[in-house]
Image (cartoon, rainbow, N blue to C red; front, top):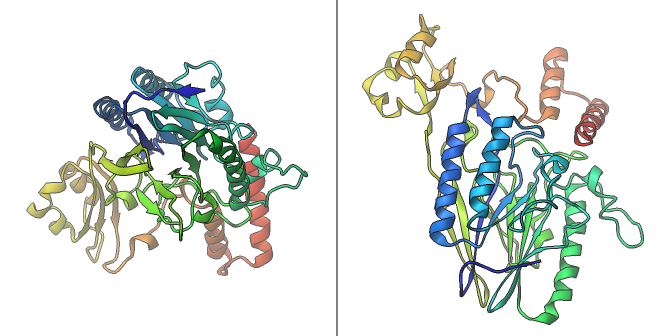
Length: 400
């Protein structure tokens, strides 16, 4: 179905992803901060006369969100769809079945592209120069997607992210070839994947299949723009000798202290007669910044720390011995401190004792546990058993 753009002489697209509605930060509710971002988004769409908003996966933080979180998304979609077209795809945190259950019942300008079978059927925008076609890939778990992406002769794609993404792009290129005879066709692919060359942070959930979690960027060659989701840092990915532009918009908020230096943003794309003519990063609001303090407790409590008093803080205290009433003293001065640890002077943050969270790589957690218990890393055969058990659990979760 063709959707006319709001603008007259070009098509403006806003690329965003990884909202993770319902997410907490070290147990702290982020509902108000997510609401602030969505308010910003609605205002930006109205101001820039955006023709379509792309949300490339992980709209929710989990497959079964809370009622409050569902209401937050419902309100955002209602407000956005009054002024633009919204196109969403499920990510690895979302349930494609649950987020896409009402796709056929929604108004025309709320499009949920959750079907693997229909990933070569784009949303079509048009202006005086022709069509802008937008293909949306739901998160393509190889075990769940291979059968739907089999070749005409029945051959299944390789059991990997690269395998299913290659098969999906083959279908997109076939559809683009059919459209080429009708005039200028400009194209976008939305995908939720870890593309080789991207910089990770601590808050992205592992998507390893068969021991491999990434796919080469060259898979996406042949379209104008690839709107990626999954990695939380905004960044561009390159394809050698290609005019295809590939970008992660990143998450709108920092969801771990590894993201505290990120400049969170959305991407405004402008398509004209010659294809994609401009990309502009628009900074997202920062309701409360993240920061880190490290040093002796008296230094941390001194006047130099006044500027971060209202930030969410990770505090690493390096006194030779554990300071008396350390947590109480820090909490009194820094009401938004989320992490307070006593560490040795030379400790690396990565080596500190950590709480196991769902964002950590389960295979690495299991390997660390075996190393701790047996004082030896798991053998190759033990690693294969662990991987088989882990993937069986993942398959069970995806089928629910």
